[in-house]
Image (cartoon, rainbow, N blue to C red; front, side, top):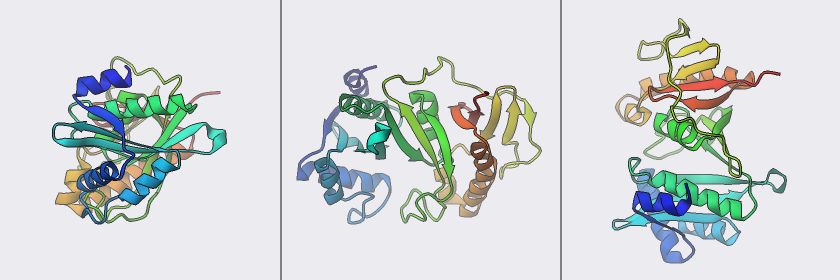
Amino acid sequence: MTATTAAARAGVRIRLAEDVATVEAVSRFLAGVWQTPESQPPLGPDALRAFAHAGGAVHYAADQEGVAAASVLVFGSPASHSVYSMIAAARTSDRGVGFALKQAQRAWALERGATAMIWTFDPLVSRNARFNLAKLGATATEYTVDFFGRIADGVNGPDETDRLTAVWPLADPRPVPLAEPEFEPAELDRRLAPDGRPFRARDETGLWCRVPPDILATRHQDQRLAAEWRAAVREALLPAFEAGFTATGFSRSGWYHLTRERP
């Protein structure tokens, strides 16, 4: 699907933010998403202007209510032929706005010779995992403990910022299956998740790991429980990535599917 078609389906217009007024609007939007004061946004107008001036891209999607989504791209090392998505967010996840924004990023990067896009995401946020792996067809290749350190915002709270690194081939994307991989009972690990249910398994295709359905709500309601989920999923995923597994799928029921290429 082209970026233009995706934007039309989502009911938005996607543009590059290049003037002061627009980057200020994008900065305010990001502050709203990350629940920070407008004076302390994740990225201020000065940083956004600098990224664009340095050859990066600040995309934003707009509808009748204003900014509906925004993202920032910068180039990676010349040898990598990649771009790095520093931040991306949409006001809502049910209209296809985020998908349209990602397609706009992809088109912009391809026009400038990039072959891959890289970004990080919280492995506990199931909706992001499903979007990245099942919707876009990216692959999570690395698990990093406390990637950013503690972030004082309304999304991360006091939790540690473990992150998965997503890699999305742009010129030749990994085919997304028509049917998302669904977890079926297999060899379940006896260790239980903080909710008292199994969350680790294996079968002939690889490994499986379940995450909570809404970790953002859990952080607001029970920070101790959220921290227990972080520790449990870290204990399951970190050794798997160190052993050469990558996350190649995510089921509707909240299970990562990890596979490993065999020699």
